[in-house]
Image (tube, rainbow, N blue to C red; front, side, top):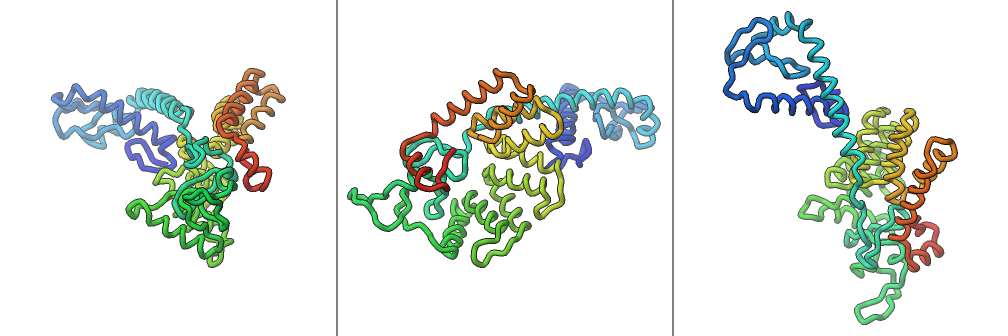
Length: 345
């Protein structure tokens, strides 16, 4: 874990690193009008530009050397701890404001029917040919050519290119998509290749958690929230890495703040297991708004156990119904009735 005054990128950013950042900010604010003042040692009173040995924790006082810092420690300790406590409280408040802020829509609309894409993974299909994510209803519906004639062979309903059917074709198109966007890569394709490595089911791919994590980190950096959720799960369960609940929580938070409802539900479960029912309920409520049925079930259980009010459960049901109203269509219902893996809620 990073210590104050030595912030690093990573899991500790959401915890102790937040305190560090807050201390830095408060220190900068306290000195903004003192640029022309002469530094004074808090222990011996010496003045001068060489008085630059700052307290590592609160950053509010300076010393001329390490010896003076050590001598003054017992006098400064109480003030330092109080300042750090307030900074930690403020950092935690700012973090929660960001964490529980309503996230953006993760998947947007289907590029064909223009209805909101379902959050359930079986309700949407990523096309390696064009890089578009299309709802199961439009995938299942008949495809027509430019003259309006029905196409017999299966083609992508967006770009009209025959969809890959063999493992070799899937890998070929996926790797091609990884070079899209001027070489930056298609985040979904990169994520999917990570899944292939994790599962190890496609021809030529053995299970490789390390490679999967490497690709998911790359996809996450490109803005694909589901990648961070998978990284969080890996740290929670010890897939390719040591079990680390703090890191799992960190990556779940990254994914949830970008709109991943599964990660949000996972955060709710972690808070519930820690006995923080109110925080768990807040996470579940946000996840329900994005169509996470598991979170709705947990809120129902909370209500049954007296841990949530009738109003809470009613609100959750209303939010879920609003979500269904945005995604439901006759075409999607027909697809779900035809194939189980086209179910979208």
